[in-house]
Structure formats: structure tokens, C-alpha cells
Length: 438
Image 1 (cartoon, rainbow, N blue to C red):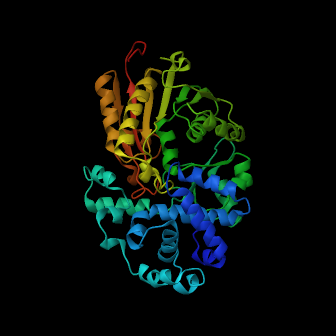
Image 2 (spheres, rainbow, N blue to C red):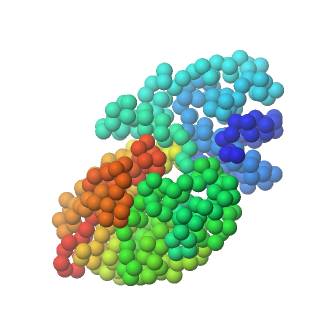
Image 3 (tube, rainbow, N blue to C red):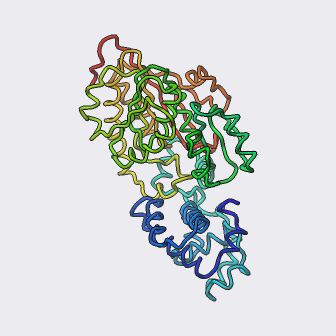
């Protein structure tokens, strides 16, 4: 049973549990930190909550964040309590009869009216659930109708995607095992190593996960690995490795042969990577912390690397299905800061390539200023690099489904592809001498 099952929620909705929901919402709503971080703190402070209670509290909090503008528009004061009650009535399907033992007299008067209210009658920002600054940026390249459709797609929870570790298992075998156990699972339409689950089981306790045969990874993220297409025996760098999901895929594509450096500035993220790496059975991956894109470890590798993946720090607006709080925590100023960082990282990463080497620049942003504009700015300053056609590169990897025909750049959308919103560009270093570009 999934965590957004309204029957299950109604069955457990006692006055005490409603208080927990409201307290969690109060903890998160100022959004002074990522919502998932704040929720972890809340759960640490309330150890009496079980697994199901935590899952449903998280689903409610994230549900409110997904529909925040509309819920604020249909409540009187938009307090944490009102937002939770409005969400339960409007999106969890709870009726007044179920809520009446839990609500105040004044609340009982406006709750029945909530289901009759429709986002379609609201202004564009509320229909799309985007802040005004983001609406303005999107209007530069999308129609209002397209903005609403994109916003509605991003209001839906993301599916749970898995990646099969091809060093240890085959996708057909994993699919058969999961379905035999009653876990509804299907092959992903694009990634040849992906699996999409129908529900949200606790897969991190499953023997397949614990043995390293599967990892949780969005299908869009998996496609980036096939775009880089590292080969056995090559020298490869994952420049912004984070917790290592893409590095694990790259290592498997290399059949654990060659050398793969997984760099990141965060010791915490790399520490989270280590148990995943141990489970994977890979022996060619070398996680290393760097201070910045100017670290001396990088200088020693200049001109020696065959392939580099730059999954750059970005606004994350393509991941709003998973991280709906990002649209409230980002701003035009933070995006501009990220663009400067993206340019610096791309320039530094490019110095690692040997002649003929490939670099894939990627973000999980929807904004051209973080994507095409960064790449075009780089190419203008680096004439020894050329842009490769992503569609052709994926076809070479046998990923040539019509829906992936995005052209010169790879652009994945939750609306068209049911993945996170990823952008990628593939660049080739064509200079015949040592790479000394600045």
C-alpha cells in the first residue's frame, strides 16, 4: 500500500497523529533548510513514530509543498494547520465526516467548500505552482499553456526508479524476482538497465539492494551515463560525484576496468557513497574529496582523461517532483550565483581531457541560462571544443526510441518522458596538442 493511500491515512488519522502532521509542517514551512533535512530532524525528535507514520507525514508535508500556492489561496490564514487540513480534504479525498472529530467548528464550515475549488480558475502562478520569478523566466521560452502543463507534471510525485548493477545481475532476472514477490515492476522505456516500480516499497531493505544488485536512480540520470559512454580501460572523471549514483553506473559500463575518479567538495556526500560503492562490487572507482575546481589533484590529471561527466550544481528545478521545496528556496539571485559556478566548473573540468576526449555537461534544471547558455558561452571561449549531437550518441548506444529524439542537446522532461528534468550537452576536445585551455 502506498503512502498516499487515503483509506490508510483516514484509518490512522487520530487527534494525536493530526498534531504530528501539523507539527511537522510547522517545522518545515519556513524552509530555512532543505525539506528532507528538516523532516529528518523532526523524526529524530519524535522517535516514537513508526515507519508508516513517518512515510505518511513526509507524503503530507511534500504534498502541501507541491500544492502550496493553491492551498494558500483557498484557506483563510494559510497556517500550518489550515494547509494540512486543506490538503487532506482536497488531495487525500477525506470528507467532513472523517475530519469532523478532529476539527474546530469554524474549520468545519470551510472544509466542505474546498473540494469545489479548482486550480483552473486561479492565476497562472497558482495553476502551475511556480513562484512569479520562475513564471517570468519560463515565459521567455514557453507558452502559458505549456507552463501550466509542465507545472502540473511537476506536482505529481516521482515514480521509484531502480538501476540494475549489470556487474552482478541482469534486468530480466531482477524483474522476475520482484514480480514473484508481489512488487509490481516494469522495464523503463529508455534506460536498458532501469526498472520502474508501481508503488513505493521499502526497497533499501530488500536483499537485491543490500547485495548491490540494484540501486535507486531516476531513469533520466541513468541516460546521462550512456551519453558519456565510457569504455573499459579508460580514464574517466565524475567531476561532481555527490553520493555517487552516476559514478556507480559509469563504473559498471566500464566493466570495472580502467580508472574512474569520483570527485566532490563534500566529505559527507562522499562518505554516503562509500557503502554504496562497497555493495556494488566495483574495483575501479576512486572517490576523492577536492577543495574546489582549482584543487591540485585535478591539475595532476590535466590532459590525461578520456571522458568527464560534469553533473553541475544547479537550481534543481527539474527535480520538483521529488524536491518541491526547491522552487521556494531558489531565487533569481541564487540562480545567477549558480551560473557563475557552472561556468567555472565546466572550464576546469575541460582541462582534464586528452585530445579526442568527451565531456558531458549536465544539470537537472529547466532553465536555458543554466543549460544552453553556459555551453554556448564555453564554446565561444574554447574553439578547440566542438558540440556533439546527443541524439546520435544515444543511437550509437542503441537508445534510439522516438521519444528520446531531443536533438543536438538532450532535454528530458517529466511531462514528455516521466523522468526528472535533465539537460545535457556532449562536447569533444579536438585539439591535437596538450590541453592547456584556460
